[in-house]
Image (cartoon, rainbow, N blue to C red; front, side):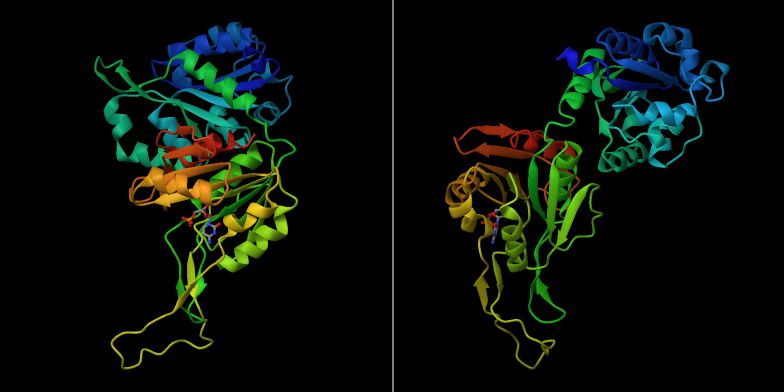
Length: 398
Ligand code: C5P
C-alpha cells in the first residue's frame, strides 16, 4: 500500500503547535515512500521547527514566503503546486488555522495555497482540551466537516499542558495510513454509473399543502458527492431540499413518490448501482384537490390516503446484476426491520439508521449506520460526518 504514495504530490501545511515536530516524521515517511512533498509553514511553526529541517526531509524548498527568491523558478507557486496536489494535509491544525479556514481567510502562504487547492484536505488538530471544546472551534470544525474537509483526531492523551485529555494529535503513522487510504480510494469508482436518490417526497393534498417528512437529503447528497469524487458518473434524483447539488453530478429534481419512480425507471437501465437514500412517502392523498381546501365548520376532516409505489420492490424483476442499496430509517426494532426490508425488496445491502436519535440521521450532519449484506453480514460505522459514512457505504458498491 505504501506504493500508493509514489509520485503523488502532497502538500503539508505546518502550523505553530508543539506537535509540529511530529510533522517532520510524516514528511520524512511520505518522501521515503516516493511522494513529492511540498511543505508550507506558518511563521509560528517556523519558530518551533526550522524550515531547513523540512527542506532537508522533503528535498524541496519550504514555502514560508510566496515571494522568496528560492521560489523564483516556480511560476505562481501557490497555484502551480496546489494545482497538481493530490492531497493537502495540515499537521498540526491549530484552533487559529481552523478558524481562519472556516472564515475563508487567506493571509499567508499556507492559507492561500489551501484556498486554491481542489484536492482532498485533511486537518490533524492538536490543542489544549479547553480550546478544542470551545464552541467556536466546534462550530468551525462542523462547518469544515460539512464542506468536505477531513479531520483526523484529536485523540485523548497526554497534552503539552501536562493533562491527559482530548486534544492530542494523532500519531504520524495514523496520518500516513489515512493518506494512503484517501489516495487509494481516490478514483476507485472510475467508469461506474451510480444512481442516487435523496431527500423527502412531497405528496400534494391541495395547491398549498402536502404530506412530507423530515428528511433533509444530506445523506443522499453526501453519497452523490463522495461517488463523484471517487470517479463515478453520478445521477442524483432529489426530492425537495434546500441543499446545493454537489459538483460533477447530474441532478434531476422531483416532487412526489410517483415522480421519483418515473425518474428512477428512466435512468435505471443505464446505471450500474442504485442507492435509494430518499425517504419516499409510503402514502399519498388519494386525490389532490385542485383548489385550497377550505377550513369549513366540521371539527375533523378525513383524508383518504393510498399507498405509493414501492420503487425498490418494483425493481426486483429488472434488477439483473445491478447492485441495489436501500436505506431503513427506523425508530424502533432497527435491525429486525432493516433485515426484513432487505429481504422483501431483494436488495444487495441495506443501510440501517436510527432516526429516533436527534444527534444523527434526519437533518443531522452526522450519521451512524449499520450496513447489512444480503448474506447477513453487518458492518457498523461509528458516528461520523455524513460524507465519511457515504464513503464507507460506497466501499460496498465497488
Ligand atoms: O419501506 P420503507 O419505506 O421503510 O423502505 C425504505 C427503503 O425503501 C428506502 O431505501 C427507500 O428509498 C425505499 N422506498 C421506495 N419506495 C417507497 C418507499 C421507500 O423505494 N415507496
